[in-house]
Length: 361
Image 1 (cartoon, rainbow, N blue to C red):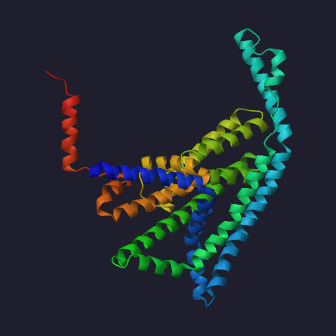
Image 2 (cartoon, helix red, strand yellow; image 1 turned 180 degrees about the horizontal axis):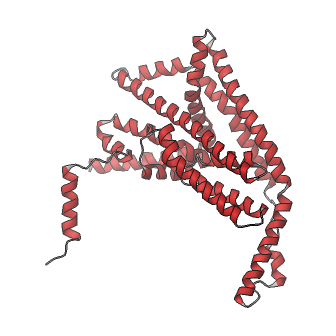
Image 3 (cartoon, helix red, strand yellow; image 1 turned 180 degrees about the vertical axis):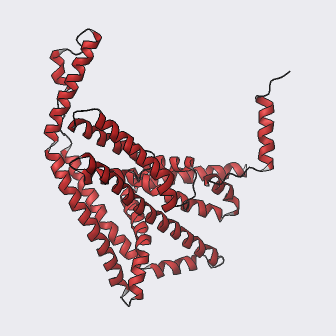
């Protein structure tokens, strides 16, 4: 009976926690991003502090340097994006022309008119944006979040001693264990962020060189799009590749170019997954593929794209948290990627095999 009550309490806490995370996304998402960037900026700000900079100035200079680099990249991408938007009407005409020609060719192959001429124009009509107010609201919301994240990072770095003292007072009996947990969690977040930044840069460089050699006009924009979407494991590469291949298809006259683009992007993805990421990122997160997929789906449901990116290192932090609890260690093992084959598990699998798969004679 007591075990049933504990299970019920756990499920209630889980459901309430999910509701709070989903409803409080506007507050929690920039805060978590701020914590992540604070861990990423900590080595730089500490270096400035060691050079006799006041802490506030050291943090401000660190954020300013990173922001200048980010704004420079953003300005370059916005210029290319504006040029691409100006070409949308022409791209739309190319789409209508190609689809019309392909439908006519299919109709000839089928021996009948594949499309009714009276309805063909309706199929190729360009949809207009009816949600202008919603778009403006979403843009303003995103800009607000982007502006408050540096503030969170600044305050977290500035009051880092304050938070350390809070952890010490919170856990006076097992102080060392809690401080080790905080250090390990910070190391996981730092390693993950530094790793994905390097991986993103390498993927952007490889894709940019290929797009430049292909003669794609907005090669910097598409290379950055491929690299940024690559941050969303398993899903982002398919979405970004689809749009890039569609653009190549609409701006070229041969099927060879989209096919070569697909093959190259697939090759870059395989190279990144099997060589770049293991060497650059390593196994710092140490979470198995099933847990990663579940974390992506759960994060996307709760916090959208931010959740799909953030929940991977958060799952790693959850794993080391569970490892420090004697009663919850089995759940930490369930999240890990170590699969030792023990004698008991081998005997269990042999029993299952004899019972269900061995033919009775």
